[in-house]
Length: 510
Length: 55
Image (cartoon, rainbow over all chains, first blue to last red; front, side, top):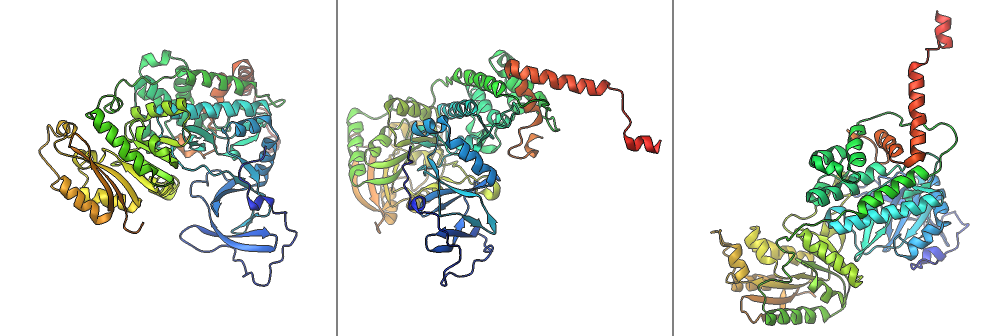
């Protein structure tokens, strides 16, 4: 099946010419730089060319490859053994089936662009389809992590049947196309070596199984735990958070209790002498893990916001007026990327999605996000991506040099931001200064749809029932003046109830 | 501390556990591993050539 990305690099025949043309400057072995830039050499039809590239800062863990972006396309340099593994993978039925179903990223060998970086000659270059937005497991809801885990196991089961194995089990190998998970790490697939182990089993337990067990059985939110440790939750930590009665549940005794007892063991591992083993034992384990994870369900009860769409202070007239306002603003032009902060169950994200390539629907409430995720899956909307995200406690830069996992603003620049009934939570609820919140929005986007909720609004009165302190800036007049200092207001509507006002604002330059 | 191991390190304990949960195929390998470990422990120590010479 031909991948959708028909790139010029891939069509170019491999050039036999290696000698550099006269106008090509000599290539240094590496360019000393603090930004991580590296000198690279590419074989092009007109000879060898030098260029500068920067590796993706999150792609170094697997020594068999490095990812870089060039002209908006994603490439991966691969080692000798990884190239052989890839060639074995592309011959399999499971590869084509998974790519066809959208479960595995489309990949092909990029000829003519290889492959000497900082003095190292790599064996080959792969060209990957680009997934539109990067997100991390600590921003997913329970249902999302569960479906990502099942995808990982399904791919492993398919690979095992055709003589392959997965070398890891990291949740960071999964990204999302809207509400559908896609496995991005082609280099995880390697030829089965006859040892009856899945090397990624421990990692899978720490990044998928244990977080899911804790959420489903103990209602412990996994997002702060996964954000706190990129390695995930160890069996020992998980064991300590479970109650005795949990160890009677399926999987807890072996994957958590026994695993935690064996956790500290060091050494070369169990020796497997004699003839190479088949994958039956790994397959048995995978079937067991699938059964456990399929049986997990999170029953959170009601959260503060999960019922918000059904029971809020909006009258039917307010609701209709708000929908009309957002729909008009969204229809003004076609956007590539929209952020919807405080998306709740995604009603307005879907309105915006009718005129956008992708809407990132963010909410701090994991219950609301999980409900949104299931509704999106059911309805088949493909361009809304739900994420658990708290504006007042956002995803930081994490990992090596704090660049392996990036803050939200570094992962994409939205053409439009929706901030509907959020500002009072930030300013009144979390004490963020109004001026700084508006500054942040102005730095993030050139177009903003924002709802101001008055102090007289019943929801705000409820919020402030036990509080005395007020931000003196928090009045409609002051808010409007501050907004106009940063944006040009193109439309303004006060909802019929009179306590909520919507603004459609654009930066002066746009 | 497991976090001291490399990214791809499957962990010795985790490998052993996989044999235990790996059904009959895994148990067969686990049994063989156990048998070999026990046999080694109870086997009479065979002096190496170097030890024989120094003796």
